[in-house]
Image: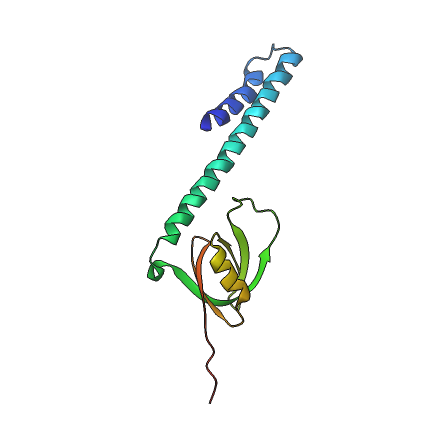
Amino acid sequence: MFFHLIAAILFWTIPFFIPAISEKYMVSIVTMGFIALLIFLKNLYFYVNHQFLIKAKEAENENISNLSSFKGKFVMIRNEESPLSDEFTFMIFNNGSIEVPLFCRNFHVIQKATKANNELIIYYKDYILINVEEIEKTPNR
């Protein structure tokens, strides 16, 4: 993956060290550097996406006592195109003071959050939503 980044830097520095290169070759070398940079960015995108999937799988296997949590309400699902895998749904929760963005893979958890009428306890790790539990309101006496 880093080979492409090194190649791009090398292609962009060659015209500075060899000033006698004709413009035609200089343009082609700079273009090859740009193509190498695009290939590097594509590989970096797939690598980051793969690492996020691995983190999500590890977080889903964690014990619920090891997860971070907060009380809040479900706000909305962002339907815009996600920079991550299509497996994730981008959800927004409000903890009373700020909106917290989380990514979720589990369809059952997404349904529980969207259908909840009461306040929720949201369990997450590294911005990955793992589970939600609805807090039952008890009648006041």
